[in-house]
Image 1: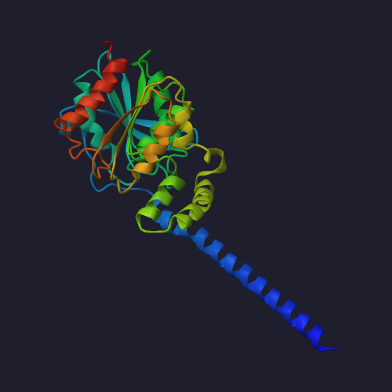
Image 2 (image 1 turned 90 degrees about the vertical axis):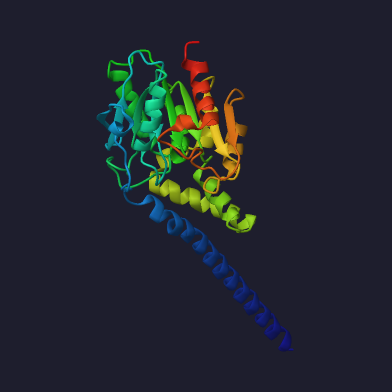
Length: 318
């Protein structure tokens, strides 16, 4: 008579033990997933990037004026202005997370200056001579571009001159974000940009052999950590969202098919979300930097024709 109650109690204890084990396992999995973003991203974004190689305008036979910009959140941003008489447009150059310094774009400033374009090379926050100890992966760097646009508009040298933002890698993502947030920007050239940081994080996990389910499971934890670091106010500022705000403004998106840093899937997402008039150029291979020689970009004929053709069609006055 007492056997059945004892069996029921044993079964009940077994169910409770199983439930506790499942809860503990789920908790451990969640803790593990939450620990991955700071472990991978922390060394990448926390701190200041001090470049081992920077360039001077004089190395390229041009003159540049050092300009200090102040962002809306109080950071001093270093920029380098290369003026031209009666420019067709002013290009704001932005570089990537770690390399190169934006001063590598003095080669572009020289080359495009010969075709009537002025340049402002902006060293984004936490890089080089700019202030900051945190890289926010494009979420707040558009404020650096905002400061650059304000400088151009108040300098008196560029009345009515279009502003085009030209970025590489994180700079390409920031160029798109800036265009979405700053209506005064007339156009965008974006190279090797990610569609969002959770996207590129998950894409790279798959590229390293992680199963898709794990890469997808990691996305919300990457998004949460990024928002925690950059601030909730700018958590929604991502290229995938901002590119939809271009309206009728021209944009050129460039990517390589085998990019091992920002996989091609980011490019495909951006194109799918962009207005139909946005132009694209796809390069074969793993070419994250797109070209090999930033000192003499015009030596790459296809690159030079694509960039200059885009600029001249929209702002060349032809």
